Image (cartoon, rainbow, N blue to C red; front, top):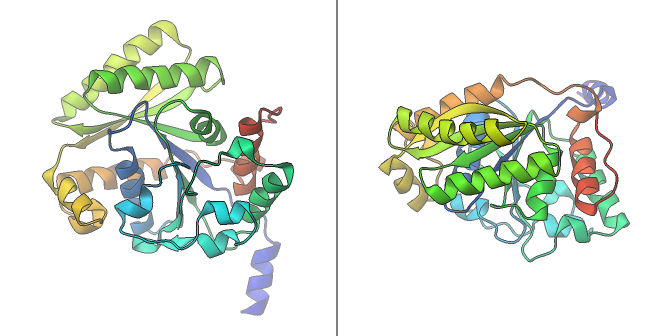
Length: 288
């Protein structure tokens, strides 16, 4: 066992797929998507970490009925290691609770920057996928998390404000920060066609005004079982696994699991954090 552990520690870090889940406005079910996508991937046998990146309003722990004693702020101030703040979730999911309070990544000192990078680089648990549940909107912290991720899921629903704000988010990320590829997920859709129509509305505008590639990830149906699961503080994929919403999340997880695996330095978890911090602090960012 000791020899095997030694060989594992000598091996090169395994690439980690980093997926940011974001939205132009609140109330579209973004955190619900993050949680259920993460749990569905974990249930399929993947080693998944879910990071609550809404640094002001933590929602992941509330949605799962968890009561973490420590959070990311304790990693930042050096009082706890990353492994000490991780909370176990359903299906073996690892959860990094959001920092309570208003401290943003951009406000960290160089020493705190180094500490966060070191915390992630020293993580010993095997990891395949990191899902980052961002805040809604176009705040600096949202932009930083999205820029640092390899895949970006934009969650929309059938509301004019959702569509308008999703376009605004994509526009800012594209024009100001060079992001070019987004995966659009229609949530709470009353039909598969409604989901496709939502995507087409956004796609027509982006094709006209922006240099981006949008991929339709699919649609999660409006489902009363989803609301029941939320009240029970459980992911719908576990609480009601045969529901329409649960089946949709499982299909989405299968799609995400087939996305290209990053290679080179950009695929390592600490590189994600380095990119996150350099983009947050306004320093020059070194891209792969």
